Image (spheres, rainbow, N blue to C red):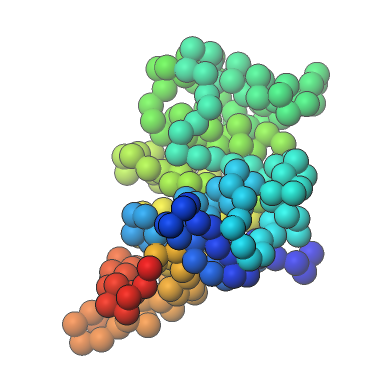
Length: 254
């Protein structure tokens, strides 16, 4: 496949007078882990919602796996997995029952569905907790189960909005390990995050969105070098985001 996993050109989304996405040009290659960073209100989650087909664009172009996510929503959803901040798990079912339920909803019946459920329980490290009610799971266990649900239909691309939000350090690292396994298997991953260490560890490239526009894009180390100076001899991604956000405000970005 030579077409990118995600491509937007002049993408714009308005909510009345508010411009949430402002002429966004973005390209995500197949098989890469791409992170969207930026301050609160920058347009990250709105961009994700447009890519998932939950919101129509106001103008511009958008393709996901070569398809229009609004007009070809069913085809896009059949080939992508989505993991939002709030999951759809039934907390009064067990982990195994949740996976079996979602497998049936996806049309995975019989031995094939059961086999896939057991594969994902083992892959996510939840085999021993599979028959416990989800209400007794830790936050990290819930996120791993949610990721397993997201992967039931073997998507080509996974879209994640703040996948480790609110997790402790150990739980975050467990989710990171699973995401790195996805990367090694060739699945495209697009995620938003506020954790700079997460982006630096997981992402091949990051795009920094400020006021709905792509302020910078590149490998984490390249972006850090771009703001290196005497004051920031070894800048972090946090320094990059702060510098770009400040520049955008000073320049009158919307």
